[in-house]
Amino acid sequence: MRRVDELREQTVWKSDPHTQVKHLVYRHYLQCWMGKILQTFPEATIVDAFAGPGVYTDGPPGSPIVVAKTFLEHTAYRRFNKLNLVCLEERTDRVEELRRQFAKLSPSPQLNISVQAPGVFAEQQPRLSTLAHRGRAETPVLWLIDPFDLKSAPFSLIRRCLAGPRDEVLFTLFTNELHRFCQRENFDKTMTPYFGGTHWQSAVPERRGRREAFATAYQQGLKDQELFTGGFGIKVSNQSARYHLVLATHSEAGLKCWAPVTWKLDHYSGQGASAETAGALSLFDEASVVDRLDVALRAYAGTAQRWETLSSQAARLNHMDKHLRQVLDKLAAQGLAFRVDPVRARTAWPEGCTVRFYAPEDVADEAS
Ligand SMILES: C[S@@+](CC[C@H](N)C(=O)[O-])C[C@H]1O[C@@H](n2cnc3c(N)ncnc32)[C@H](O)[C@@H]1O
Image 1 (cartoon, protein in one colour):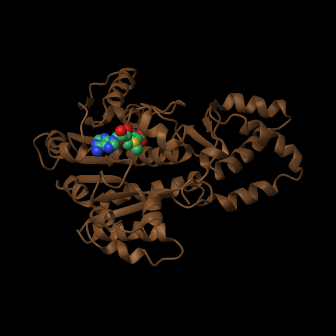
Image 2: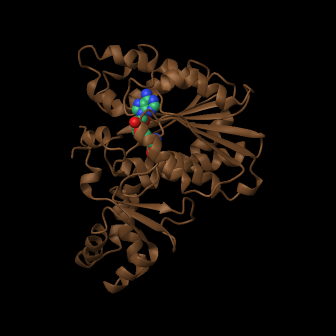
Image 3: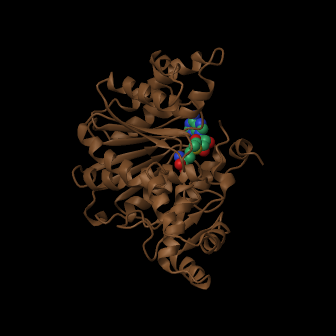
């Protein structure tokens, strides 16, 4: 089944490396946001406005579960005040699946989860805003806005999510679609509401880096509204960004959590990985020996493996753990291996970690 049909027809669909990178951005950002906000304010809210079913067919959790687990597994959890997690999803089948996924988590008195009845975000936003602020405009609210298309989240809607003084938005900006379709006839009727103005036109003449130019134009629109903003291209290996995550916040302090996220994720996104990879490869004098481990690890595509399994596999092929780490580095640079656990670690592949593997077809840039 084509991916676009899978997304439309199935309740739950398969994850891809881009989703993993997006969730890593969420997890790193939330680690920092929660650490600061939930020890400062008596309560705060995260609204996952395009929540999805909470799980992917191949096992990884969806964004609402990622948020809940980041909270429950945070090192400062015991010192946290209350977090409200409000989820909206338009499809009934996905709402039901999401409720099933939440039911598997241990309840916590500090985490108030509310899965809303199926609804369309643009219609529900005013009600969700009231719910999220709990009667106080200054309650911090982080809105996760992750739709499938451009039309579901025009700039006017994003602006409404930023009405409160401590509202923040983490938004999926479809830079690849913008790049591909910007010169199509009548597409300006979609672009202008999406950007909240015609400033997107400045990116169109860009020959190289047009996706980035659209992200910059969008962020300029936020800056023009006196907002602070950060952006991060979601790509794997050395491919072009498929989409950008854009943070919009009222406070410069909000950006203090953002910059470290982008640096930490360089490795996973492949942006900074090419030099490392080149260095890693030079360690291997006998390419064929390395290839055996490379082939063995690639055969794990579609599964998650614990370090112990990988290490014993490497040993059976007469490799040491340091070789395993180098091959994992190489696969990660191509978007084929992701450390999914733990989120934070001093090294890329610590003992005890869990690694999820993908096939090259999962990485293929179907768009360009
Ligand atoms: C990109 S997926 C969300 C993935 C999820 N955030 C994650 O990272 O695991 C978008 C979801 O939004 C839902 N959706 C689409 N349009 C919507 C709308 N206008 N309001 C609310 N949900 C919508 C879709 O059914 C789909 O499940």
